[in-house]
Length: 378
Image 1 (cartoon, rainbow, N blue to C red):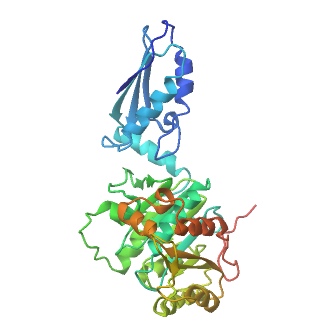
Image 2 (image 1 turned 180 degrees about the vertical axis):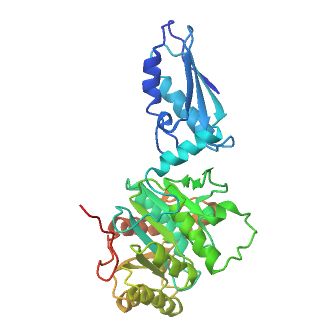
Image 3 (image 1 turned 180 degrees about the horizontal axis):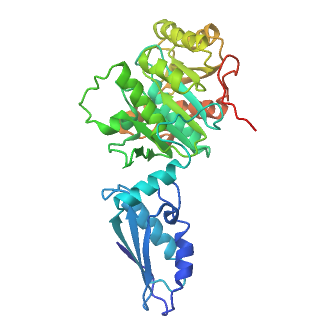
């Protein structure tokens, strides 16, 4: 892969300057400089200003080749004397992949549980009592809104049977795996992990309790999430095995309950809220989705599903009403197209409300009363 730049008088290329320029180029999935993760191979320059760079990929089928080549070319082309940049790719050996996996894990042992009480990451479990209330759409767009505000955000799609994140983000590829460590897929500034990345669209998931628990455990502990500011966990509807596993694996997650104005959605969402309260799980608040139907022509609002459901749910589970998201064409079209509305329709009424909710999302932590804490002897 190459790029021809404008003609300039022949000037000797300083390899030290080239390497300095390369030190600014990061792997788009690891968010670490190429040289720090062992991905930078030979770098050479000839007398006519041609610079060649060998990149060691984590996998031969790396989907980020084009991005890496573009970033390298852009960085090196600014160095005096560079007339042409050529980027070649080769794959890491098994030993190199093993070293990288160990480096990424650091001092964290394999199978350990991250996001504990001492973690700086805010974890929100987005839940609903029943399906069809737009819980996953809310999760996806809140994540993009937080990322647009400059935060490092991840989504764990724990809705194993009805996973939606691959569709909502327009992603259809398997994550890179490094000796037991998976790299989340990034789209629209958000790091993603979903069982849907490993299955064909028409393949059913027929897992039961133990397998579900193991899957959630691996998606938490065997994924290189990096230093996240916020992790959103998209739960399946109701109070089943996955929700119970989450309470055990991520005890410091805070609940965000999603409902519509209808009593049918509100009443079953109360059960999720009460389960959280009984388990001493903090509740961040309630989001009422589909609060009104916004006409695409006249922009008038109609309370198609009634009103007040979100406020009544918030009162029932003693939590704040974070916001009321209207249903508009932009939000529906974005989900179908695989591009979050936060990106595709930034002026939509639904997006305005979701952006406001993301900015005001409270930080809540579980009480230390009644829980075991690690002790150290000085």
